[in-house]
Length: 379
Image 1 (tube, rainbow, N blue to C red):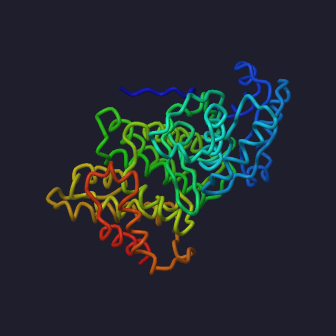
Image 2 (image 1 turned 45 degrees about the vertical axis):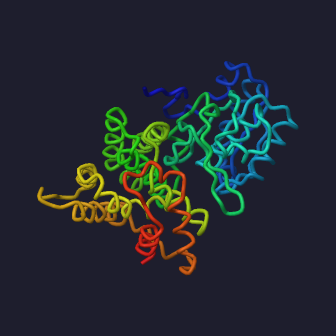
Image 3 (image 1 turned 180 degrees about the vertical axis):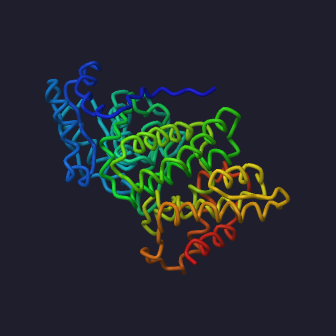
C-alpha cells in the first residue's frame, strides 16, 4: 500500500504562506535550517519575513555544509534547544533538508544523531517540521530517510517517523539555479526513478509512477537547463523530484546510489553529479537481470532497438542513450574537474559492494564489478 503523510503545498509564491502555516500549527518560534549559499541569495528572507509578519519568531542556522556532518546536526540542535524553538524549517537542497530532519528528530529523541544509523535504535515520532526545497533533485522533502556524514563516511538513516509535516514547493525559489546545478539535481531525481524502476522492491504501482517520472524529467529537464527562468519547467521538475522522493520509501534505490554515495564520501563529488556519472554504468550492469526494463528506459531516453538484441547489447545501448542525454542534450557534465587518486579505487570498490542500497539491486555486485565501474566512470 502506498501512503504519503507529507502534506504538499505547491505553486509559485507558496513560500510566502509559511507564516500563516506556522500559525495554523500553533507554533511560536522557528529554527530556519539552511546554508550560507541560500542566505547569500537572500531568498531565505521570504520565509523569515512571512513568519515575522504573522508573529512567529525566527532564528537562522546557516552552517549546513555539503554532505552534512554529525557535528552540523549537534550544533543546529543546540541552537534549537537554546532558543526553545517549537518548529524546524529546512530550506535548501538535500543537505539542509536532511539536517533539518535530524535536528527535529533530536527534539524528541536522545543524541547523538548517528545512533539512529543502527535500525535497532527505536525513534519516537518527531512532529513540527516544514521543508522548502530550493533545488529539484534529492526529494528529501518527501522521503523517509536522511544521510549524515562522519569521518568521510556517509551514514544513511531510515527514519519514517522523522519526515516533514509539510513540504512547500515554490518554483519561484528555483529560477536562479545555474545550468550545471539544474542538470545535476535533475539527474539525481531521474536516478531515483530509474533505480526504483529497476529495484527488487518495485511493484506495479511504483512502476507506473517511476516510469512516468522518467518520461516527464526527460521532457522538462532540458527546458529547465536551457531556460532557468521558465517557471513551468521549474515546477514540473520540482514535482518530479518530490514524487521521486516519495518513491524512495517504496521502490528505494539500488547500486546506482551505492556508487554515488562512495563517490561523494571518498572523492567529494556532489551527489547529483555522482548519480549522473554512476547511472549509465549501472543501467548496463543491470541489463542482464532486467533487459526489458532497461530497454524501456533506453527508449524513453531516445534509443532505438531492433528487438533482437541480447541483454548485454541492450545495456550498452541504454548506457549510451543516458550519456547522450546527459552530455549532448543537457550539456557536458565533465568529470575531469575532480582529481582522484586511482590507487584508492580498490578500497572504494569494496565500500560500494557493501553499501546499504545494494540489497535492492537486481544483480549482485562484487568488488571487482564495482572496481570496473569506477574505472569506466573515470576513464
